[in-house]
Length: 393
Image (cartoon, rainbow, N blue to C red):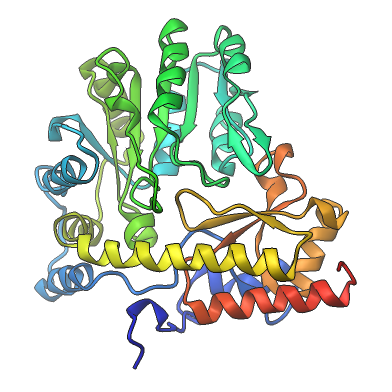
């Protein structure tokens, strides 16, 4: 038996997994190894499994009480892990962060309003704006030798005509964990322009060594009422399929407006298993998380060294957070479509094409390294073999 729980390969085939069972269909090739969508291949922590099994054994699955949604556990977690003093009264339950993004856009903006995003960025940021009839206002991140920074001059200019900023902290896909100094500069611009900030902090517990997550709402008492924070245990504890998340809003009026929209759309109900899992995760999941972070750190180091040594035309900078590697494939000289074909049909590895994160992602691919070292090694070796066959050396 493996000495490390994260080395254990879990067979996810025929489990109804979008990541695994849909891979061949989505990538148009047989035998594709899926290293794409952001869920991990690890068993959830034992306390979560036990909590779900205990709840299931009760055998009655009636409506859950809105007074018992796991918010107390989340409050303690935020204080312990991020030194953020919150109140459970600030929390509103939603069936996922993506749902919360659209809800906030619907609630606090009007059709035609401009909303700032910072591409390359998580595709649902675009969708939550465009599908609700609003306009995307891009404040592209600046890339310098593989390191991404916020273009504050451009942000200050565009903030003058926007109603909202949707912010990714930590950033998916580039892996930045924004520093306190960067966040202070960002909040200054938001306050000067009365921008409401929708802060997606779902990856906030997946921080690698040498970095620290700073919740945006903690920057100052002035910015706190202007921040809507979205979080969930789903990325951290691998419970995405339970669709349970929390939106944290300290300003009473803003919170009431958001909660009213949740009620209006009839999505204020909660999943009994999601509640049980969230509470168990935040009360008892920390030891598991600390082990996970060490494993992810080693995976990130392995990826960086592998590409540097064996595939030098694909550049990889180690992320500061998340379990997502952002591969710069521009030196391969392939189009967006050719990159897809190279990875899926030649290498037989399923990755997210960077173009889906905005035009700034063209020439990049996103790789999910939240998997066993054995699976990761197989994926990278498949890429290396295809790379050599294509004579990219």
